[in-house]
Length: 69
Image (tube, rainbow, N blue to C red; front, side, top):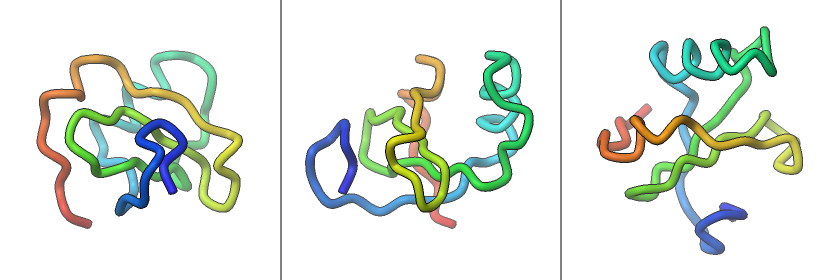
């Protein structure tokens, strides 16, 4: 269940560009266990197994289609 979309969605691991963007925010150094909601327009990502540890990707990722894992 995506806390932003408030519906059941598929999730996938962040791709390399998304990982770099999260690192640039300076909040996280380890980004290999982050997953992203694949709903169109959703920017939510979270740490695997801990949906309360989540954030939003930068706006530039909103228009990019969600790639299958």
